[in-house]
Amino acid sequence: MNTYQNEIPKHRKKINKSVKKSKHKHDYKLLNYTNAFEMINAAATREYWVTVEKKCSICHKTKNFTVFMSREEYLELLTEK
Image (cartoon, rainbow, N blue to C red; front, top):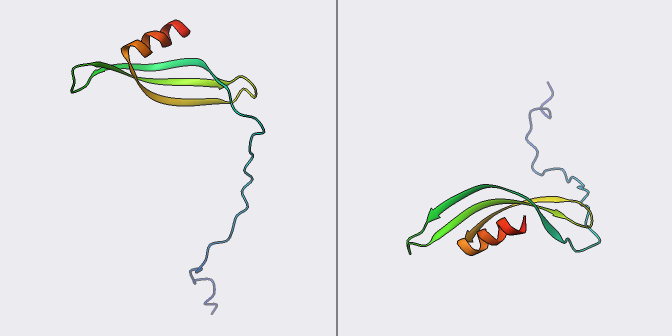
């Protein structure tokens, strides 16, 4: 009877992960925005909860951000697109 098969290992195996670092500073430009929800906070001012998708102009990597914006920032976002 082999008792080693039923043993629980005390340490996890180390796994080498290849982390690829960029060699440039990302310069994200607006690509798209979705899910713009208007909310009124406790101070009775309007805020917008927006999901923004931005794209790096150098390596074309896309990244999603969720942002709270004031009305002025939201209107600026609409004119920027």
